[in-house]
Image 1 (cartoon, one colour):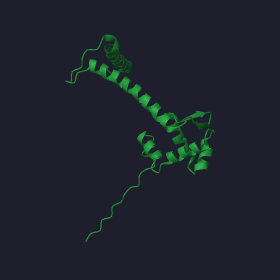
Image 2 (cartoon, one colour):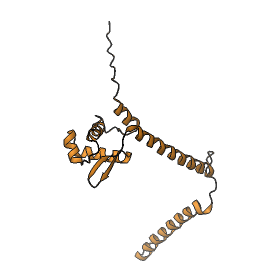
Image 3 (cartoon, rainbow, N blue to C red):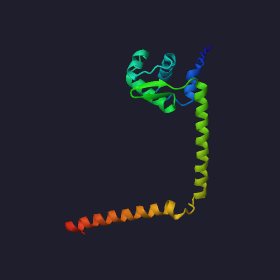
Image 4 (tube, rainbow, N blue to C red):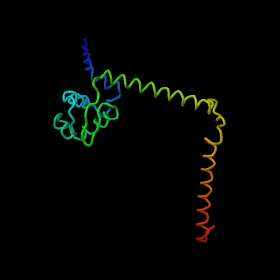
Length: 163
């Protein structure tokens, strides 16, 4: 008779799931330190805090706090003024709504880029012609620079007496 133990994972708390869903948790954040930092920030309300103070408050390494505060700043969750950070979101619904709007704008831009790529390239492996001013001139300029560099190198060796 075999006994099989099935380990059931406990459901993640909503803040961890939200951070994971927003790609705010990385492989580096194995113990969800970002979530601990966010909880501390939410408990402080609108007060500003530096990374050294946040490290003391959370028991985390100061460098870890700096890393996560920079990530939160890029995500639009906190703002940095001089060396202090402050939480700028009133609620997470607003944060998610803002992200959705940014993503919609990004997707509109992606669609424009995709159309432009499709106009200039075919999927049969042949490049369509692109007007001279956009692409053709650049390649010619690169070839010209390569030629000048080769000529310069040749001149150097001729001056030395080697051909």
